[in-house]
Each structure stands twice: as structure tokens, then as C-alpha cells.
Image (tube, rainbow, N blue to C red; front, top):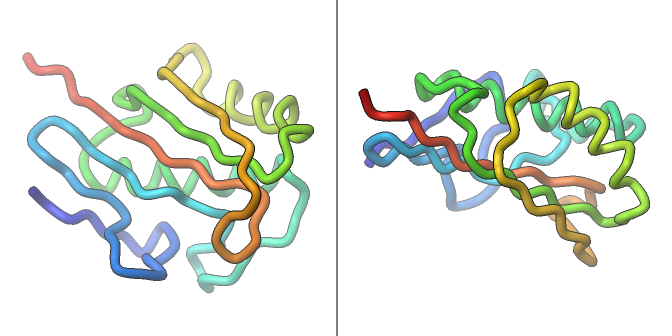
Length: 127
């Protein structure tokens, strides 16, 4: 098991790692809309927040030596399911033709009272 950390994504704000690599799998902790340059909450619309969160995930994924095409499963947590369509549009543009398995769940609250959190699992195909 290897702990993954990069300054291109928000620092862990608790007793956890940005990601953990186990053999050919990568488990990425939930990312919220925090600007990794200053570790401040990002204030913008839900589309901008979604884009930031996905790019933070991408930076962790790449730090571990994986790519977006290795993403096998994504879980999106939303405080308000009425944002689903907007989030889905940004998500679709981000992943392009790649279609990981996914769940979208509405929750009553998220860390730092944010609107969105996204976590992912990556798997590298064995040769």
C-alpha cells in the first residue's frame, strides 16, 4: 500500500490520505471545491466548482501514475439534486467518451458546507 500526496490538489484536512494505491488500484478520497494553490474554498457556480473538483481528482490520479481512462467508479455527493444536470454536463465534458460506473447521491451536508464532493476508484488493466 502506498499513500499518494500532491500539492496540485487540496491538502487532506483530517486523518486520511488524498489517495491510496494498492497494487493496480487507486482509491481517491472525496474532493471538494478547494483551490489547491491556497487551500481556500472556491466560491463560484456549481459548474465551476465541479470543474475544479474533477481537476483536483485528475491531479491526484496523475500523481499516482494513473490516467483519467483508468477511472472505474465515481461517486458524486450533492447537497442539492437540482444541480444534477449542470454537474452532469461538466462531468460528461471532462470524461469525454470514457464512461466509468457512477453513483450520484443527494446528502444533507458535506465538509465545510460545500455543494459537491466527488470520489473515485481507478484500476490499471494488467498486461
